[in-house]
Image: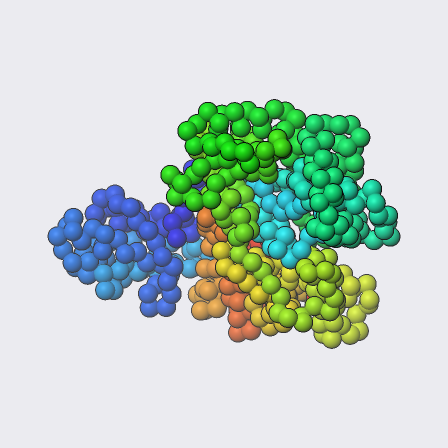
Amino acid sequence: MPFSDSGKSDVMLKKIHSEAEELIFGIIGKEDIQFQDSRGEYGDFATNICFSIAGKFKKSPQKIAQEIVGKVTLPKGSMISRIESQNGFINFFINYNKATELLIEEIKEKGADFGRGYLKGKIILEHTSANPDGPLHIGHGRNAIIGDSLARVMSFAGYDVERQYYLNDMGKQLAVVVYGLERFPIDKQKKKDHAIAEIYIKANKLYEESDEVKDTVSKLIIDYEAEKDEVVSKFEYAARFCLEGINETLSKLYIKHDIITWESQFVRSGLVNKVLSELVATEYVKNDEKAIYLDLKEFGIEKELVLRRSDGTLLYATRDLAHHLWKSSRGKVIDIWGADHKLLARQISVALELLSAPEPEFVIYEFITLPEGSMSTRRGVFISVDELIKESINRAYEEVNRRRPDESEEFKNRVAEKVGIGALRFNIVKIAPEKSMIFRWEEALDFDRLGAPSIQYAYARARRILEQSEPEENFEVPELNEYEKALVKEIMKFPFIVENSAISKKPNIFANYLAGLTDSFHKFYMFTPVLKSEFKNFRLNLVLAFTVVIKKGLELLGIEAPERM
């Protein structure tokens, strides 16, 4: 996995890779060398550069590899212990004694800043952006967790990240809510977004059954666009009321946004009309008695993008184009969108290209479901994130109570909340966004699998060791056993994984790395005594380094690291 040139990084694994590059450059000249992780007889990392340059040197990869290895001389104090050729690959073995000492010293010096990157640029990352017509459902939950995790990782990698929530306050859904609020009393005993959902469901039933109600709702939308004061106050009240409930849910998941942008602000500012006039000036806009629309067949998109209805009202896509134009003036745009918006994402990208605006980057996530019968309660036809949170914490409490029956209720509740929220977030983010997933409780809350509870437990276990004996500042590195080497190597990868996850925009890479790091620690703990060892001080320092990295790793996924479990 190559480490991009960010200009300032001094992380250990980059130093080792750089040394390996210089050794090869000294024999064949500068080439584009990529390193792959390896293990066992294949070393700690390897390169297939010999296959790439075989044509240039008119020799077989095997012959080139043998010649390079035969000519390499390792300098004194090298962080590489030996180099071997095998079937055209060049395998490198790390000098663990030297590298481990420098690694632990760097972690102790930098603390929670170990692995912080130096990538540059402003990122406008929009996620969640649910309609203000009810609570977040499980699909919104996947959006929010992917978006928040990615924002955390990208920020730690060096980017200046602005988290945005785009509030659809001009759509039909909110107009139906406004209509409903004028006819039905709102249950103020309920959580605000759930109370709004009840109003919406009742009002939408009337909307579906009556043309008169449809006309009334359309009139509300027109009046809101026209900024009629009484109507504006009703829409804003309904949107804010629901948003308070949504934010209450997000805060339980440790998620917050920097900016809430309202659709209406782009209509009010005139930016929507500017976008519309510029698109109308292109050859791709068509006008018929029903609507003004963008014909995108030339771009391989069969479905037209409607911009304005015959009654003069604007569509969501038109307002969203203005929103994207505004966002792109502030930085690079990244949107977290569901798979049901794939077509719209393509349409928006082409329309922005016609406006000579930067194309946004979309992280498209597939659907998430629960096995039938896995929830004890359901509201309507969807499962709310509030239900997921409650269920996750309740199930975590049962497990904590089973394992720690003598602990206080305060302890059990505190740990259950951290474990429950952690399990919910981790099990969602560990799956690549482009893959559909089934959320299974038995996997999420299994302490023995490599999920959030296992990672949190590894941290708590390490902290318990350090509570019994603090490491001394100075330490000597002995000859490492296989479990120590595996743990050191995983810790070394941390800055690489941060940067790779940020650049690829895949927080699942980071989540799965934490699982691997945890697995290495559990094996180290099982087979390598710490407190009753002649290498006690070194191993205490290694455990300390692990706690720094795993705690920061959990933080970057929005998961708390409990000191005790």
